Amino acid sequence: MWKILLLGKIGQLGYELQRTLSPLGEITALDYPEIDFSNSIQLAPQILSLKPDVLVNAVAYTNVDKAEQETDLANAINGTACEVLAKTATKMNIPFIHFSTDYVFDGDKGAPYIETDMVNPLNAYGKSKLIGEQAIQEFGNNYLIIRTSWLYSLRRENFVLKVLQLARKQSKMRMVNDQTGSPTSARILAEITATALGMVKQAGIKWLESRQGIYHLAGDGAASRYEFAQAILEFDPKREEQIVTEIQPASSTEFPLPARRPVNSALNCDKFEQAFSLRMPPWKEVLRLELEP
Ligand SMILES: NC(=O)c1ccc[n+]([C@@H]2O[C@H](COP(=O)([O-])OP(=O)(O)OC[C@H]3O[C@@H](n4cnc5c(N)ncnc54)[C@H](OP(=O)(O)O)[C@@H]3O)[C@@H](O)[C@H]2O)c1
Image (cartoon, helix red, strand yellow):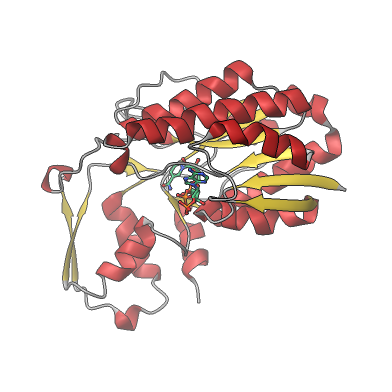
């Protein structure tokens, strides 16, 4: 029986991973304060004492705007702690699965990003995630870094829940149409991650070694925030509760935020499909199924 150590069980993705990873083995799932990524000295001995056969990290500092102020904390959680995880997994010779972000890109490419495209994060959060990626590439072995984008679930705080709430409070909504990304369901991301890990379990660590590296995995296609919001309102399972009658496109300059965002950070996921024969379904179809009552 595989012993799986899942870190970040309360997060959007971690919560879904608890469910999808469970058929693969016995899960130990932890979150803050049982583990504290801001104090990484404790991390290695904690992981070593649990003797896992695989390590999955869904912990991250994800508050993009607050990271501009709390940069040291973001770097500690998204950078330093991930270096410790990579070194520990390498020492134990176990698979290590980690998640990163489309915000490592500046968004100026004008087409979906592939894994080898130049990184150039615009904000402190993106920079902190890049530090983590680079440390895992340097010190990791048998790792997968899965970059995803515009993650949502029906829990915690995210764009989908925010739009559903706003639609019940305001008759007019304005949504930015100059930011494009690949909306991604945490549930499907967790399903695909577990399926890929099932292949690793069956084929062995050498098979993973030949595939280790960075992969993009996000909802197929791309949308602006405005288009994403329109689809959310269309698939709202309780449309009768909406008071919104109009949704207008707006410029991001109307909503100044502390952190700059990439204009177009959609991700091309072909590499993952070639390596694992798995692909994300179109983002809009997944959203419809997620919101279906
Ligand atoms: N959300 C997005 O739109 C998005 C987009 C692209 C990529 N990603 C990446 O996808 C992954 C999953 O994101 P998510 O949206 O599921 O994140 P999330 O919901 O914010 O969950 C992050 C988890 O990390 C935990 N955590 C935070 N600080 C910690 C600390 N000091 N020690 C231990 N645990 C701590 C959180 O616990 P608390 O609840 O106690 O804080 C939470 O369980 C991350 O790697 C993220 O960078 C996310």
